[in-house]
Amino acid sequence: MRRVFAFLVLLTALVMASVSVAADEKNKDPKARKIVDLSKVASYPSGVYNIEYDPKTGEITSLLVVGSSRISTVLGAAKGKKVASQRASIEADAEFVKFLKSEVKVYEKSEDEHAIFQEGNEGNNKDAMNEAGKSLERTSTKYERSAKGFLRGMQVAHYEISEKDKTYYLVKKWNSKTSEATKKTKADLDSDVPAKKGTPSKPGDKKIEDKKVTIDD
Image 1 (spheres, helix red, strand yellow):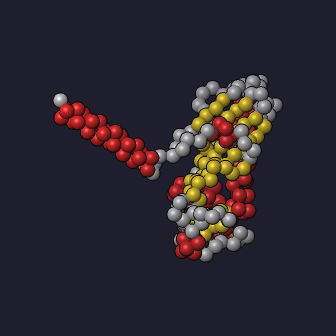
Image 2: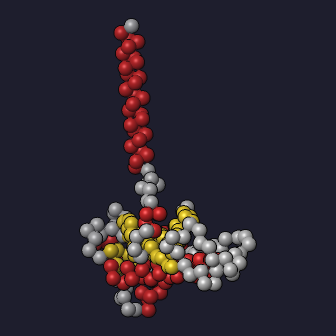
Image 3: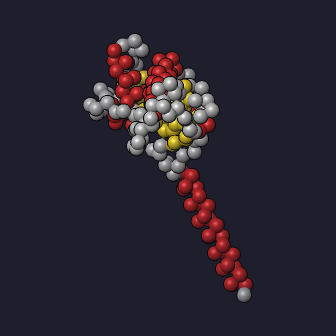
C-alpha cells in the first residue's frame, strides 16, 4: 500500500513538473506576444505608439501609428468615408515621418537595408549601431528615399468609423521585416483598406454607421 501511495505521489510530481516546463516553454515562444487593444489605440491623438525593440541591439522592430479625419457627408456617406480614410492614412504617414525626423536615427546596413534606433533609448547597443554603418543625414536625398521605403512598409492594422463624432480613426502598423521586404520590390504597395465590394451608396445617402475592423497580420 505504501509503495502504491509513493508511486502516486511521484507520478503527480512528474505531471506537475511537465506542466510547469510546458508553460515556461510557451512563455519563451518567440511568436508569443502581448495583445494590444487596437480600438483603444485608435482613440489616442495622432502619433506613434507601442514601440517595440530588438532586446539585443535596441533597434526598433515595430510600432503603431494613429491618424484620423472627419467624415464629410456633403457628397454622400460613401464618398465621405473614402476621402476620410485617405486623409487619415496621409495623417498617419505624416506622423511617422515626423517621428523619424525628430526622434530616430537611421543607419544604413546596405544598399537596401536600414536600421532605425530611437534617440536616447537606454537599450541601444552602440556597437550594433556602429556596425550598422553610417548615419544618414536627415536632409539628404538618401534619407528621404529611405523614409519613403519605410512608408511602403506601413500596413493598416485597424480602423473605426464613429457615427457620433463623424470621424474615421485609423491605426497603421510598421514592422521592420515588412519594411525591408517592400523596399526591395519595385512596385509601390498600397496599404490602404481595399474598397468594400457591393452596391455603392447613393449620393443622397448621408447616413454614417459605427464600424470597427481589425486586420490580422
